[in-house]
Length: 432
Ligand SMILES: [Zn+2]
Image (cartoon, rainbow, N blue to C red; front, side, top):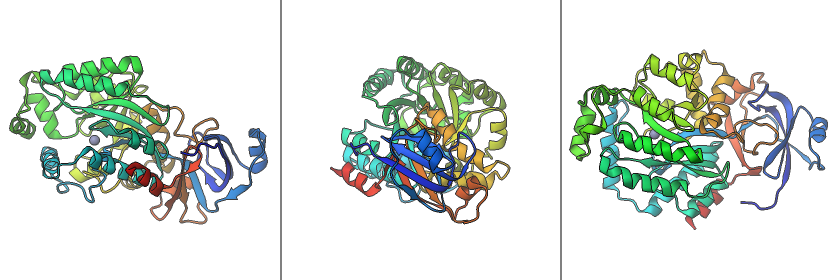
């Protein structure tokens, strides 16, 4: 990372700050890694910026957006060229594929770190500067170092243990993870009790207890498939057969008649929680999330949802009910890429009633809030200078949000802490 604080002044056809209206022919000033001014012209920018301004760089027909925030990814799958399995397959069958994939290509820690680094590089290329990452192991220090210059990472350590005898071991790992040093907006540890079919309720409760003193967020996959609901309700079905085959079923972990609401209730004690997918939540469960929207967010992964052919997500209705929603790509094990803008374009395409600005919110401001990161997500003076710069296909666009969502527009640069990101450099750093 550059140690010398630099000042940059950029003019763009549109600045889309996400904390107010878009600014036509606006100017943004970045200094010392922070945004110091956002204004409609240079004279105003000077008034808001105390030191002399450098020469203004006019970027032409581009929109400047806050760096995109991907609320849910599994970067260790980033070396998958195509998703595992086939579109429309059942979710338990896909889990079997993942297990088979992991067993057929045993990977060292270095291999996993390399896949993670590939993922971070892809995020940078596609304008993403913050990610909620599910980590199956501790990231090596050099991967953390390489990641920080390119993206802020919330590393949710995945906890898996349905049997009571696995609780202690998971908690020891969780404790160690949470004790790793954090830097606001850079890399911080968090926990992910994986899913109802892999986590004993006592492990979930203990993870919440661990998170309470540090404020670390929790992420949990929930109500992802009909087979999961069947397992919770009746302890039968394809998930039960999968757990039996793995020797992982434990009858005490899921009492008959369990519902996703039981897990939502447990998670509502946490300082902050992210409910991943929620594809099959009930109306009462959406109401619960809406009532807890200050601390609980629902993370929709649109193209992964589509890959499995789940029932329609009803996103406009869920938003209208007051649920706090953000978008994630999920991992390349179930998604073609980690391009969050492609994800937002997919949302705009299948939900044409949503305003383009509202769609962009799901991958900027709302996603930052979901992760509990107050220093990113909008282009507000004082916040971290993370930007996505998008060349607009339409030279006469009057709605910049719609122009950004136009598939012909493209990300041409990413700024992280006021510095232009070079993804190739980061990849090399990660290899060192
Ligand atoms: Zn996931």
